[in-house]
Length: 176
Image (tube, rainbow, N blue to C red; front, side, top):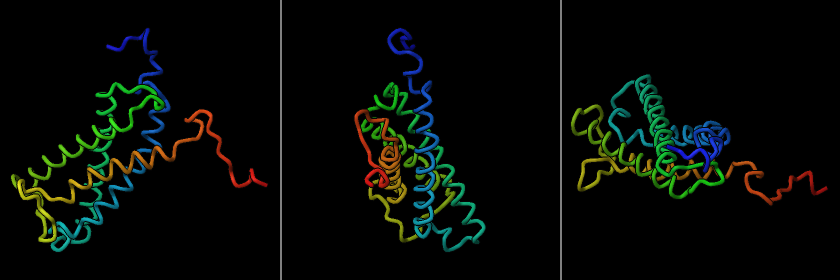
């Protein structure tokens, strides 16, 4: 239980409007865009690219992108819980990113293994690099190493200047 005398409710991440604004307005759109790009780029690594009709491929990209958004958001929120995050200023960005990446990787490894080796829900094309010790494709694992890290970096970079005290930014119109 949170010590309400030590940490006021507004300082806990789940009660902080700035945190939710960051997650919903900055993190989620970037996560969605990067995952959509990744899903489209890796299509030739799956057999459906060569075998399925265009409408099914479109559905698969949409379905996988929505799944990626859910995985990425769940991983981030879980990392905030595990790190006992408070306001954005107090976030341990590297720790939160590392935990998010680890959770995304773990889920993806299990999902890929179950869907390719157990249920045969999808299959890899001969272009997919496969890990030698486990029959899992390299591309989906790289996705969960690269996309969450890039999303955190890009969404944090877009934060407003007043989130860093004493920082002055000049607009081009300020120089005239």
